[in-house]
Length: 160
Image (cartoon, rainbow, N blue to C red):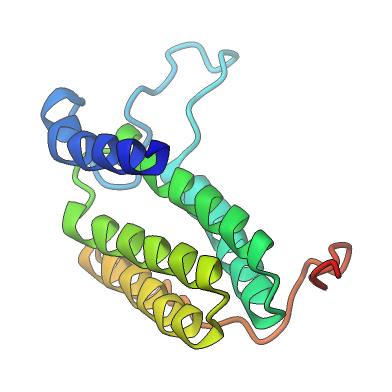
């Protein structure tokens, strides 16, 4: 029930948030600090860099059939998308929604321990990320299925 309420809130925020938020150019912080010593909000590129790390971890966990970690990383990646949608206007809401829907399917695949469904949903997630980048005029930022992990200090072996 909590997950359903969170999803409803996400959809409402995605649909209503841009109307309430300050209109800013794509990929710029919405509220730049006048005093550079004050902390600034995370830039969209920084949020997406964190999302890219989650994307890698999500794949590594899914590849290892570590479904508890898949669920955790999918939730964290969904949080990153939610934060981006709340902080930045002019983001293509249908494409962010498509990525979030893929994350919901990833979580469902993890709940069912279904590796094939995970792979399909992960492919859809990656495609949604790239579609968003193209829509933003950043089609040179291409996300793909990871071939290795930079996270050599994390064990992706599921507990037995």
